[in-house]
Length: 101
Image (cartoon, rainbow, N blue to C red; front, side, top):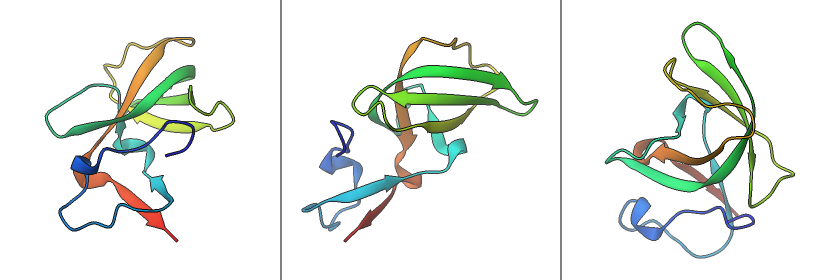
């Protein structure tokens, strides 16, 4: 976790070592703001800005738990968020990468 961002043990594959510190890594196109069956909530963030890029909307996010971080999410064309909105940030379990050590 970093400032309250983290994953539940159930989000990881069986046998994954869960002790110690690590970093959650993700590509911008893997972050979402909806809660599907395969999505895991990793924290809340405030929308700093959002711009339409044709195939997606690029969204800059500021995690509430650590405002010094800046995340970029490529959201679907249908995303209707506005700057200042508070959103849940999710990622599908198959796209979770954790770097430890």
